[in-house]
Amino acid sequence: QRHLIININQSDDAGKDVECLQKVMNSLKNYHGQDKVSLRVISADETTNLEVPEITINYCPELARELSNILGEGNLGLTQQLI
Image (cartoon, rainbow, N blue to C red; front, side, top):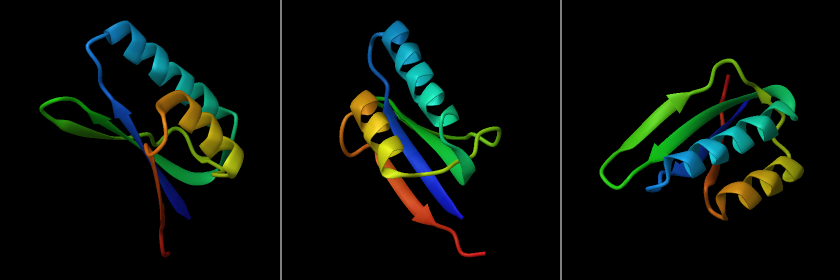
């Protein structure tokens, strides 16, 4: 099983941040599978790690491209979990 960690950089525009998060969640829902997802919300003074247990995905290049288009390059991390 793989584990996708998505970095979301918090800005000063809460509305824009919510819209960005909604786009990310909608993309994830289009790639249902067995891989786990976590969000890492990064603000100026702290980082918050959020598990997303209700969503499992099938990580693939198409999903990575969609998420990179929303978040910018370098905001995705994929780890392989040994069972």
